[in-house]
Length: 90
Image 1 (cartoon, rainbow, N blue to C red):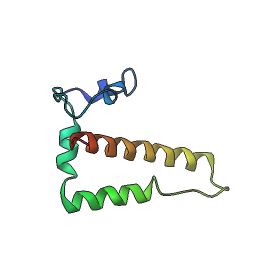
Image 2: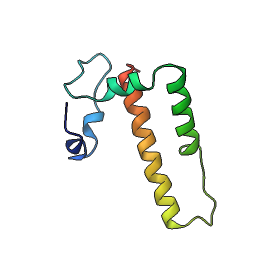
Image 3: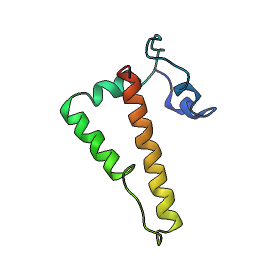
Image 4: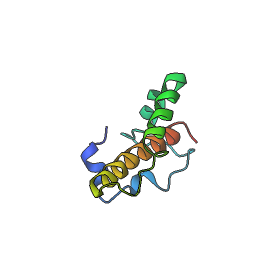
């Protein structure tokens, strides 16, 4: 399995440019994410994560720290959703 520390080297290029019909590279976490979030419980977890982050807005009085924190959460949830979709062949 690929070292997670290597996933950040050079950005997220390893997520881009792959089609679902391509062979899954060794160490690709996408199939694991797809299996983890398959079924009704997985769908419920993803829906909850989406509601808590991507579908959430902060008011105009939100601090810089609160905005940065929410953006970090959104990025992580977006990555989880992308890996899950790619692992499902979507």
